[in-house]
Image (cartoon, rainbow, N blue to C red; front, side, top):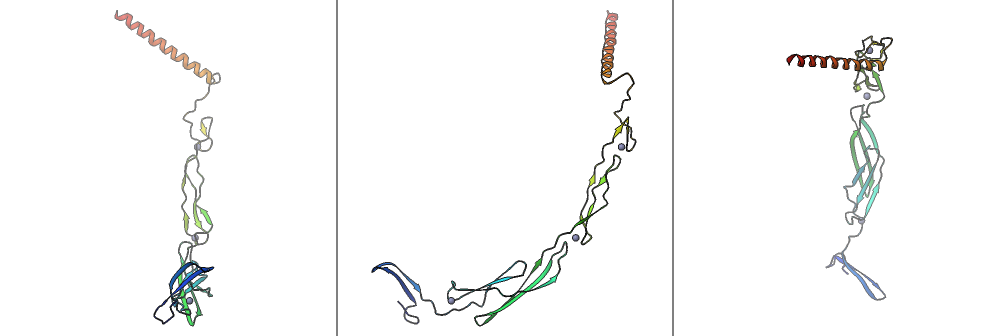
Length: 211
Ligand SMILES: [Zn+2]
Ligand SMILES: [Zn+2]
Ligand SMILES: [Zn+2]
């Protein structure tokens, strides 16, 4: 085994059990004492409200020291519904004969719009389109949600006329007192038969004449 400052800067570990050697390893000789890195690792919370600082030993990276210093948090600009704000955090502490200090700034995310007030809403009728209404933010007053056009409603026909606007029903057929739907059909059938008969008679007549 070498000694610090000697002609060898390594040392050997040997594991023996009951006189039998199981493992042997030669390692570099570690210097004595810690040598804390002046460049610590600062792990800030996204919102800047806290920080965890890790300082490692330059002599042996497995030696670490953790600090959670008090954070001074300052809002530089407030966020609005649509724009981000900004904060500045700072922290400092003493360790290993040194003062460690750091600042951290980041955005405060925009809050998004608050409750919406509906304006310009209009129900559709059978003669005019409606509008679902525009949503205005109750916090900032901006138009946050554009409304959309609502299609006209159908006419409500009764006795050939729309009960709302008075428009005539294009499909309306006034019913005569003694003809229902079935008699309409019979009438049609009779008409078709009649026409067929007349045409047939005409055709017959023409053929007869050409002979
Ligand atoms: Zn150390
Ligand atoms: Zn808003
Ligand atoms: Zn109508």
